[in-house]
Length: 124
Image (tube, rainbow, N blue to C red; front, side, top):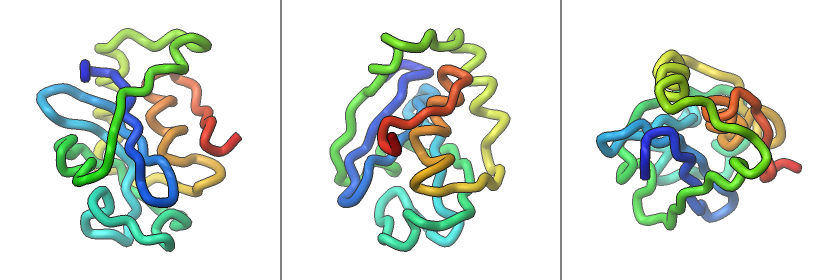
């Protein structure tokens, strides 16, 4: 992946999303009630209302799950310049954010960083 790329991760019950920062790191939203949510997310954590934005190694976030680059929304939205995406992302690290599988989900967050427009095909 290249900095600014969106990464979609197949989880047992949903798709998790992250944004690649470079040097093996991603930024992603993780449930507050989990120690290492990227490796083992239980069903209840999908429905949590609080989450934290974390910078983590891609390999730690993915674990044994399958992942892929997913910049397909580039056909509908123009991504911000990479430097701006990274700068925007870094401002969120370690901040607590509201989270719901239906509004403000993982996909919304990374698309907000890349396009300045949160939208989720997972929800729609």
